Image (cartoon, rainbow, N blue to C red; front, side):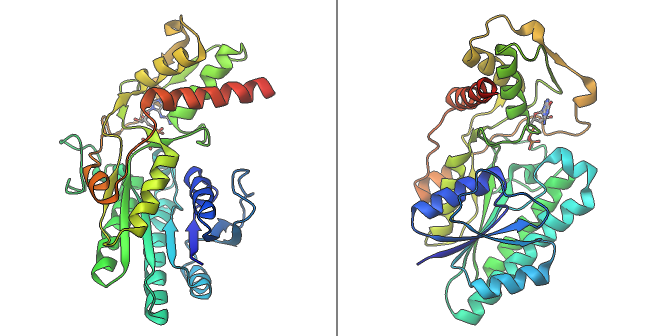
Length: 320
Ligand code: GDP
């Protein structure tokens, strides 16, 4: 039986990945923060180990004991906004924590003589504010925030470990969303507020930069790409993206449409306090390599993605 070790199990992607692996009959072990309540979305069949990725020795001992076949590093200080408040913690978790785990996986491979497959959840933020669009695996790495810089370090170390014989891949994930996204991300902030407006429990949607553009995809599709990358014959880095960017304003319009609210322009405003001092203005990824090598395909387009999130939030609002 294949055994997987997943960090970041309490995040959006952790729960989708666990569901996916369990469906395939994989035994799933996960690392969760001691302080964290397990997320309601984590399947009960997951064996949860408490610890902290920044405790490299503790995590290493656990990985050595488990000797997993596959390691998925999803743990991260996961928002750019948070990384500005805690750049040192972001470096420790997103950078050094990832490198510690890579080395742990390499040691297991060396000790057991079995291949250990490692996937690092990398991010479009490693490209910063790129001058080329869409970006691909050869786009220069030039992060513009603490989140991107820490992810860039981990990304580069994947390549270093690959050259030392580890089946390590870096999945350069563009923004990927779902009803499980926390409201600190703009997509879920929009869909939860629009649902509340449609139900009469909120009257305004206040955002930052409405012109920022992102390539938003459906989180379970991105988890599918991550698993395919782990299982590929040869380890390579992959951009995982839809290839199409939309503005925050487009997202807002699609959300109101999905909620059946026609006259909404006057309900939305931009607060300069929420506009980030440094922000990528447009990110869009070229996933040709993932499509060609992995047979990967996004299955949910932008309008459908927004509609699914709004629908879920409308149900949550009605249930309260
Ligand atoms: P990110 O791309 O990982 O930073 O994901 P976010 O969902 O946090 O932000 C996506 C884009 O939406 C960024 O360009 C933000 O500047 C922009 N944005 C505009 N208004 C807001 C807001 O109210 N909250 C958040 N989180 N982002 C906003």
